[in-house]
Length: 335
Image (cartoon, rainbow, N blue to C red; front, side, top):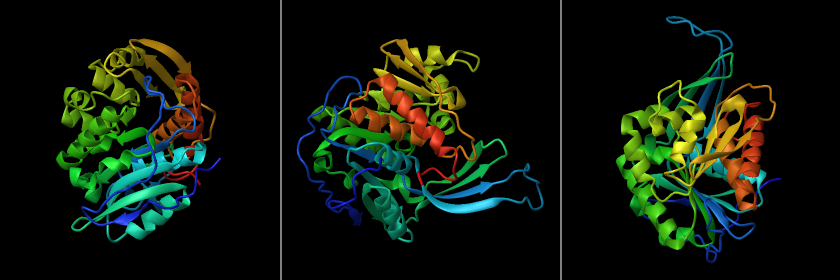
């Protein structure tokens, strides 16, 4: 199924513009990460970037040419998750992000075509963020990241009415890795908690997490109802050494955040609630071409299912199905 059309209330704005989103109160199930069926929209606050994906079947050859298939595609963890949520669920999906003027119309059109209602703030100084994804024969990817305008979101880009009609708020973890966007994320998180709107966070990057500090990140996301790390991020946040079982990490983190869902690639996902593992979910089979955006697809599928009334294990299975679909195509968005 596809999401609702991107009609009304969206659009590209300049810095400091009003962000009225329309709608009524949230009316959601307030249990850990619960959202209730058909009672409100999903608001994603995150990043929109331009992905340059280079698939090279042979190892990189330093100092000379390596044959590759290269595509320029719309991306960004927050935007990707929003698009997958719109594709796999029935709730309205909205996105707040910041882009450069040079590609704002292209990104807005791509989001609307995916069924997302975008609220894109155009940055007056920086271009849209760019990520170069190097994808090897095993479909694993290495990222070169220029955040550009994406992490220049600020509290000035937020307005309380953005939560009108919203049943769940999702924050891309990338927001927490720069001062301005971290302030915006904290404002949005606190506003949602004050309204009783559940909040989810995906930690986004083990490398950036290590630089910021796991404790600092966990303190920043206090009040969130759902945490969606991958295995490396879960171990790092839990302070466990590499050989430690990911189940221990998930259980430990669920004492800080009520619902923790750890993505494990081809091994599926683990669900932990309040200190214990409550479900182990297998991945759906797929012939992997590019793993870029698989975690974002999981997030989108998981949140769409939760908005549809699914429990954590059922929602994790929906996330795994979306992730398996994502790895069969280039880039991080659904077709």
